[in-house]
Length: 113
Image (cartoon, rainbow, N blue to C red; front, side, top):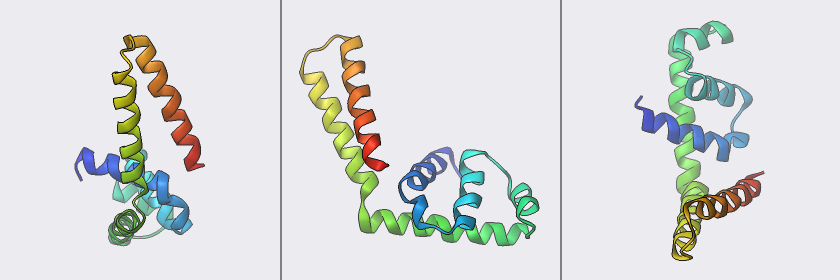
């Protein structure tokens, strides 16, 4: 799996991880965030590499299905883009711009909790 896909799955886990079973969540988190191999996860979960692979594929599909139906990541990216555009239109210096974007990013992040 390429890095872009891993990053996307990590973000989708942040948004939708609570909608997965604990097994799906833990296996996916181990794979995308901790870079664990299929063999390592299989050993940790006392199952086969094929079972881990199947769970990952089903979990990633489920995460993409959640996103296609609910669209939280798309909405989050749109809001963040709007914040960045608004901050840049205010003719702030680089430090002020970073501070404004950081402030709104934290605010948006708090909405996910």
